Image (cartoon, rainbow, N blue to C red; front, side):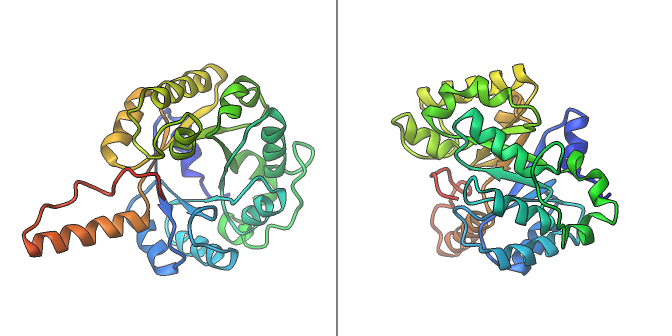
Amino acid sequence: MRENRVGTLWGRGEAVVNGWLAIPNVFSAETMAHAGWDSLTIDMQHGVVDYAAAVSMLTAISTTGTTPMVRVPWLDPGIIMKMLDAGAYGVICPMINTRADAELFVSSLRYPPRGMRSFGPIRALLHAGPDYARHANDTVFGLAMIETRQALDNLDEILSVEGLDAVYVGPADLSLALGCTPRFDQEEKPVVEAIDMILAKAKEHGVVPCIHNGTAEYALRMVEKGFRFVTVASDARLMAAGAQATVAAMRGGPRPKGPGTSGTY
């Protein structure tokens, strides 16, 4: 079966650098895939990407060794299984708030007897190889988003679910839940304390801690803290920042510092 680079890096104790795709375009996805990211996540929740576009983008990512991932719109077994069948190796699922949510998510990722995933890897076979059925349960992986007060209250129960690979901090929604400004690269005390708690609890349970970031500088700080999967900005935000920097240089104005930290993907 084709290598899961994320799993390989985690097995070596290294951090994964993940890119984010919000633009529903094959060429932009292929360009990002050739930029050197360890993995790329297609955002079907807040990005402007539907299923047909996502399949084409997964195909484009497959031209490289970059691990293909998807953030699904919601905790819906149908779309989780459908994106795995389309060739995603990793799935990020938003709003995992309870142990029952986490159990349903994990079960949707894996074939019986370890889960309830239905068999029909129509494109996954092309991406991964003919031995997909034999190795899929140990190769595909899931990241449960922690982004609400309820999830924080139930964190130990969520993290204790067997088969949960990782938790993914959603800083913008988490900030709103804690009465703070929705943004990435948070410095507000309640959010920083919550992020630190999630990190500590994930390590305690042997679950991989992951986080979304607005800038490379903040992402590097998170790696230093112990996060082992960091997303940096998105294709749309990187394109906007590059365009703004070029226009500012031509007009003699101040250049933007980076892709930005406001809580939009």
